[in-house]
Length: 422
Ligand code: AMP
Ligand code: GLY
Image (tube, rainbow, N blue to C red):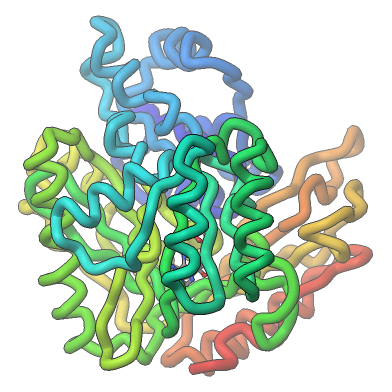
């Protein structure tokens, strides 16, 4: 069948590679894609839901896989199911109501509390009740967590070290620091602990738990410096034992899937649950995303043995329980190669060489494009990811580092300490 994949990052290149392993996939299109997806599929540029609709009809698309959150938050699922000509296309991603769990922090916290899922205490604040916000901050201890309610390109969360700073930032967020996204601010209790990510695929009834991962968000080694989209990921993080996962399943995953049903939320896709393992091994939800993580996907998909197209077809038929979901016992490590300067200013247009890969090695492109002469050049802050499977994290790490060293482009930067805490 013909499949359309939406997105342009390393996550989408990893999805494209995995979808193409299926004998069910005849032609794969990626919009807008990157130089990596261009080499294995056909890149197309579709700028609106209407353009996506025309393309799907003209090209006999039978499945649409949505990589990033924005089209989901904008309601692409609902657009498809309400359209006579599109409603039989399998669309992999939640409805707009499901995507709101990522699109609105206040809605997310409300859902968590309503369904008694462990999370940090919080208060929802607008300019009208700012005094309540100040009072709530007075009851908390440092550091203080302030979150813009809406999507703010991954920058809308502030962790303030003093009460004064938190109060000043609260005011400036409500005054438009992140535009409309911070008209409402969620103030949260700070959770101490260690974070990891759980990915669940659900058809609204049954669910499959994907390999667990941990990403490394800061730009600098030892997890220092500015926050980024993610500089690397490992799967599995060994501190997440089977006992801890049993608690996660019972107290978080099952109530989440049940919560969708109780709230009539249509959810046919991935739920990414950011979890803090707090003292005494109590897992609490930091956030939900309505999609897979990037770069976590590049460490998770190489560990999935099952046919992804078949899995998605069962998912859209509401028969996910019929899939025997097989996970590779090997570990996988992903390292992000970025342009020096990212996440602030950086140069683009650098020619990339030494992209050859061996068995169990994966180079997934993120910010890459082709120049007029057909050279692969950098076009973004996160340029490529290198992933490798190995018998354990250390083994996979060594291999991923070897590829990271081998790939060449001017101003290449990567963290050499991914997995340092394992
Ligand atoms: P979010 O966009 O909600 O995932 O927040 C971004 C990052 O901020 C998370 O991955 C955590 O590292 C951190 N963070 C968010 N909320 C909290 C919290 N309540 N306590 C501690 N850290 C948090
Ligand atoms: N790696 C974090 C994210 O995808 O949101």
